[in-house]
Amino acid sequence: MLKYYLLLVDGIVAPGICLSGDIPAGAVECTQEQYEGCGSAYTLENGAVVAYTPPALVIPLKDQATTALASARTYVNNTYTMLNEATPDAWVTYLKALMAIASGTDTTSTALPTEPAT
Image (cartoon, rainbow, N blue to C red; front, side, top):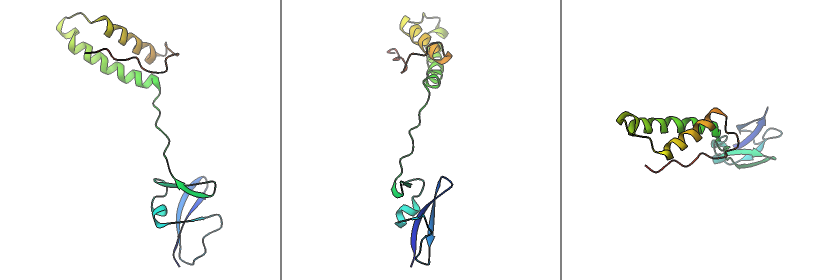
């Protein structure tokens, strides 16, 4: 009799198929769907098969600021500097805030400043 199972091996959940009917010690019997989704849709938790939710990707604020700063600089250069126009104060303030976060000078902010209206 064919049985599907999941087994924790050295901290990694591994899928397995047993043809003899007896699954290995420590293995948890599962459905074919759970077997096929091992690692992407299902995992083991406290000896039971559960839906797998990957950890949320957290991008550090400093990295977010660096990316936003590059984009804002490009916008300001193309919209104002290249046309020999004065940069609005709101954009200067925004750029300085991003520079402070990106450089590590500002360590108290928990979110990026709001981009000025264009």
